[in-house]
Amino acid sequence: MLAASLALPDLMMLRGEYPLVPAPPVTPGQEVVGIVEQATDGFPYAPGTQVVGGALTGGLAEFALVPGWSAMPVMDGLSIEQAVGFVGSFHVAHIGLHHRAGMRAGEVLLVVGGAGRTGSAAIQVGKALGATVIATARTQAKARFCEEQGADLVVDLADPTAAAAIAELTGGRGVDVVYDTVGGDAYTQATTVLARSGARVLIVGFASGTPARPDGQDLLSRDYAVIGTLSSFRDDAERTDTLEALAAMLATGRIDPPVHAVHAFTDVPEAMARRAADASGQTVVTLT
Image (cartoon, rainbow, N blue to C red):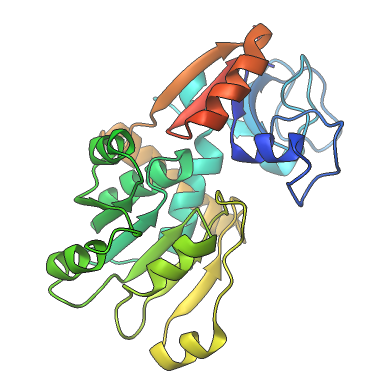
C-alpha cells in the first residue's frame, strides 16, 4: 500500500458504530492507493500497476485485499494523496448529483455538511455542473473552507436567519437538490427549504451519528424524492460517464480535490484524534 484515506467511517468502526463492518477489533481504511502485488484470475490489472481501490476494512496495513470491481488506475492529474479519497468523495458526488438526482445547470444545490470531504467534493462538482451552491457549516473556519471550494452562500441551518438567506438567494423558490452528508436534525432542517415541487434529497451519509428519517407524509404532500447514494455504479455506462466527466473537470481545473492533512503511518493514533476533532477536507495516511 502507498496511502489510505482516513474518514468518518473509519472512526465509527473503531467505536463499534459503523453498521457495515463487524465490531472491533478491526483494521480501518476503506480507500487506498497501492501497487498490485498479486492478482487472481480475472482481476483487471497486472502486478506492478498502481491503482486506487476500496474495501470495507483493511486499508491501514502494508498489504490490503481489494475487490476487482473497485480497482482502477489513478486518474491523470491527481497526486496519490488526492487520489486516495477521490472515489468516496468525487465519484459519489457525480453519481448522486448527475445520475441519481439528474441535477441540471441553473438549479440550486444545498450541501449539508459542506466542509467534510464528501460535502466539499459535492460543492465543487455541483459548481462544475452549473448549479448555484449553498453549503452548511457550523463554524467560521468551516464556512471559509466551503467558500474556498466555490460555495455561493454558506449558512448554519440551526440559525433562524438561514431560511431567509436561502429564500433571498432563490427568489423565494427554495432549493432543488439537497446533498445530505449529516443526517439527523440537519436532514429535517434541510427539507424545510426545498422547492415546492420536484425537489430531490440525496442521502449520502450520517456524520451526526443519526441517519436521516424521511417523513412519508411530508414526501407526499410536498412532492419531493429521497434517494440513497453510494459510490458504486449501476452499470458500465454510468461508470464510463462519471469517469469521463470527472477527468474533463480535472483537466479544465473545475475540480481540485483538497487534502487537509497528511500523516505518516506511525502517526495514525494522532491522525485519528485530529480527524475526530476537525472533519474538514481529506485526511491521508501514507504507508511508504
